[in-house]
Image (cartoon, rainbow, N blue to C red):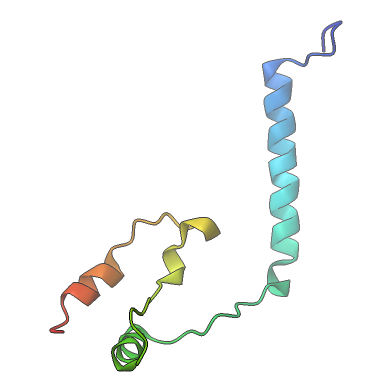
Length: 87
């Protein structure tokens, strides 16, 4: 740290790494406290539910690739399956 209270970039990076490590440890420790509350089902059943729904439009979400939950948002498996359907 210099006379003005500024820390070196290396020290700042080390502090960031320590903070990230502590956060990761905490989230890992409480991982079983989280509960998935949205309804889940298979791809086939979810498509059938959407097609049978009297409500339109209907949204089917592939939650495993959710970018807001840490997924990359680049999995095209669901899209390929939908496009392969005859409807």
